[in-house]
Length: 253
Image (cartoon, rainbow, N blue to C red; front, side, top):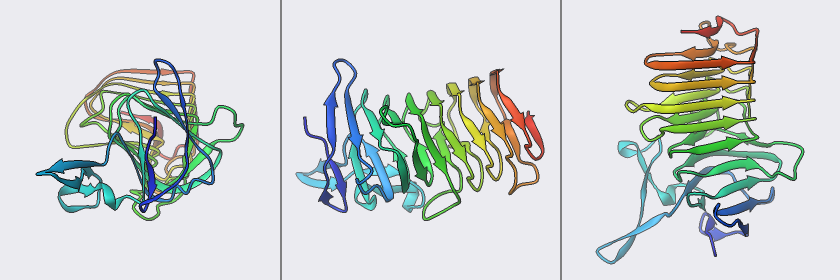
């Protein structure tokens, strides 16, 4: 099976390993040039009246909130069930994820984390972010948040064993004017030194935060907290978390 990864229309190599019943593992070595604006989606083009045109994706800033696939510097084809494995190192890019039911993780053979310097936005359901880092100040098209989760399209999301550190605003931030998340899990993560909140949540039926270290958030905002629980969060489970040094409060509801 051949998958497409393109960089400004220049094709680069990628190693795919099929896993029976679980989709493909897409291995991205550090030398793969993941920079600028990165799109993860099942496909990038469609036919209209026998003409191939770019698909439109909701990516701010853009006319009517959308951008064509050609606007992205790097495009990675991934399908439900796939795992994208990043080699350890730092990738300076902003990432938009539009493929549901995928896992994005550091390569399991690596000791160090793969680090994203930019915003990672999840615009697809049942995505797992596993053992990666999202760090650093605002750059390029970054919003200033670390991980953004679009509640318009997400009903379930898991963020596991991740480092979310030093972002200008909130480490894990919910976006979207409508929609409700059925279950949001944040497990074993470090939410450290983010300018506003370590994380926030609103319109979530079940919020589970377990085994996390949530410290020193709020340096850029006097009301910054460790965990901000906003409107219409129905059930909250906080277990075995460590809080310290969050500017306004550890947990604010």
